[in-house]
Length: 189
Length: 328
View 1 (cartoon, each protein chain N blue to C red):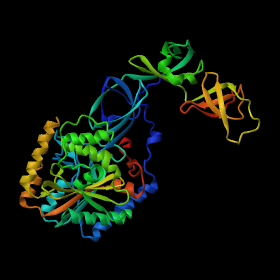
View 2 (view 1 turned 180 degrees about the vertical axis):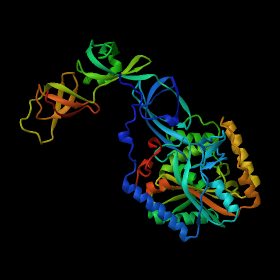
View 3 (view 1 turned 60 degrees about the vertical axis):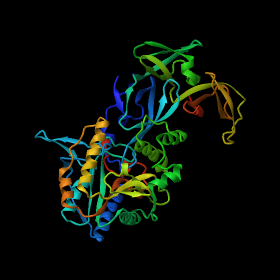
View 4 (view 1 turned 120 degrees about the vertical axis):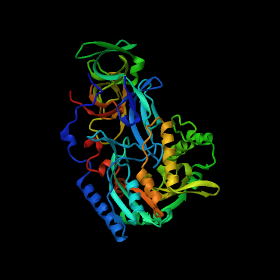
């Protein structure tokens, strides 16, 4: 466990604030000509996902948080918990559905994702930026309509519901951007 | 394992400059224009040592220490101010310096640990005459409109509806809370509160259509400026200039009294002790020069990289310097 000064705060650095783990998003150094300099820091609480804006006096320090990110394969969900496995050590981890939150709707069995661990305990799950998922339910496709710009709801194999163009049919495989939860294109798989 | 450790530097991506060649050409042109400006005004360019035995005592300046081979420790200059004042006392006349200065721990969009400073001193000027001349330089380099001037006191009245000289600490704290600043523990140091409000709430709004000169700071923030009484309060004849929210220059109607200067150095060291910072040796050469007699003058230091940023509409200081500190 180390101590870091505001001058070393960089995007991605993990620190402890009031005993919660945070990831630094932005760090702006401001100094009013002469006098006290400040660091205006945007940081994400890794437990709640909430973004906090906080001003520090330059040179203030925080403890670093023992946070590591591990690549893991999603095995299955038993409803209450999601089960993951490290593809290198075959070590298994389970995370409560609550902690996984919305990320669960993009996870298909066998997919790789990033698990954030704090003091050896899983904190949250980041799905791949893009996933390919099959449409299980939607209104019939409108043949040839690739330009009208209209859209409709579609349910995917994981249960996620997204907006898709009118020409999409049940059984189509779609490429989804999980960061925005939006349709990108049809995927060939 | 998806490690959070820094990946090894790929020098194929870092060897090249962060500024484009056209930016560097613009930079060279501005520096040539600055030299031409002072040449026309018969202000002499001077050189000052980068490697110094003494440094600024200001508790908010972090000097970089350099161990020499003979076990002596020197400092890299944080500004050319002290040697320039010794030149002034020797009777050289009005002078300017254009060169590198160093400040540890300063790093960000508008800060690089090593940067280019323009500093000049005009014999017989007060801070208002120097603001006039600086405005002329801005108009030449930036095509800016005439600068507007406002006192520190009126600035706080105008933007935050408080009087920086009379409002209580809890009033300053309330303004911070009302404006959603998630502030650290600042205690009862009023200047620190004023600096928090200034940097977070006022500065970003300054100098949008024309340069903004702020003058007559509270005496406690006078630094090396003369102090006098105005409307019943002690003010330092110091000014700061802002353009598009960027702090660009800091100037003084210069303190010439050696006894008062010694007192301010000592006060800095008392403050440093309070802040658990090492006390610093004071510049006896400067004090001896002041005791000999330095002509009445005004001086200002200007961040040249920021000036170039403004002239070329750059968003980050890295766009106007070839090799910022993380690439040296």
